[in-house]
Length: 307
Image (cartoon, rainbow, N blue to C red; front, side, top):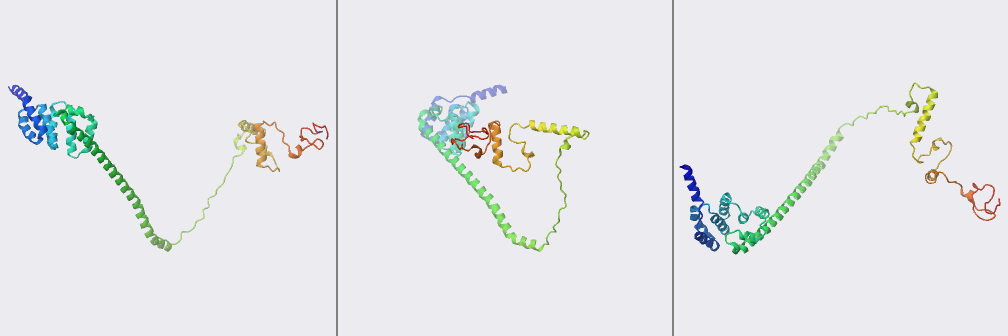
């Protein structure tokens, strides 16, 4: 018996309002939304789950700029029916009327309500409200941009304020330090000087010798072979002529950097096939007047065959 009563109650609640009633309420909604709301209350009491009446009631409340009442009707509509493009738009307009522009703009972007004709086709009143829809979408976009610019300006102001505070705090600390400096100097002058203690730490350096690398059990003759073998290993690591081996073995000889660089260039670029002579050894011949190398032609001039 209880299940039958519940079923009958549910069927009575789901009854749709007559078309004549919807027409009357719809005309009043467009002409006088305040009076339409008063007519919709008894109609919704009799037909509480009629989708058209709920949507018209939410629309009339928005037109009458009563956003809280519109949000109640929208919630009842979404509870029992699938939402369409007009319901999120009414939600966005209700939030905008409550000065909540960021959330209104988020709803417009989330449900892609930029097409005015699509929104008008799903609202009571149809395309007769196209101008009103366009006005509200434009206003939501404009006010949201203005609110975003204000938030950005306030954030920049807060950052500048924090930066000035960070700069002022060290400055205040420096002022306090400078003010306390004379007192510190007076206290330091009254204290006895610290005794100077001489550090007596012995320091010695021992460089490794060639004998340190040889095993201690080998004799003198074997050590000579060991030294030659280590020299051979060191020479095998040399890949070019960056190091001249003869320089450490020269005694009582003054070397100059340009001489060393000339020898390196001859060895690197010409592989040693260059004869170095002085300008005097390459002077002109006294007979024919042609220059020739005395190191290559020691006996006579190769052109005139004169000494």
